[in-house]
Image 1: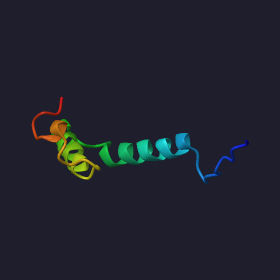
Image 2: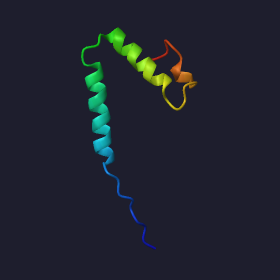
Image 3: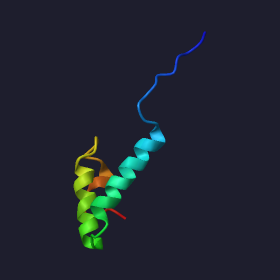
Length: 60
């Protein structure tokens, strides 16, 4: 049996590069403290906002 691959408009690598570039542009002039706040805010938007690693102050 032959499986058909679904064609997408962008490859996974291209999507990851776009995400990386967007994050770099948003954080390029931030101090470390501002960057920590940025990361904490983005973690709140994840699929698992109540994850144990998400608690404030526990980010390594």
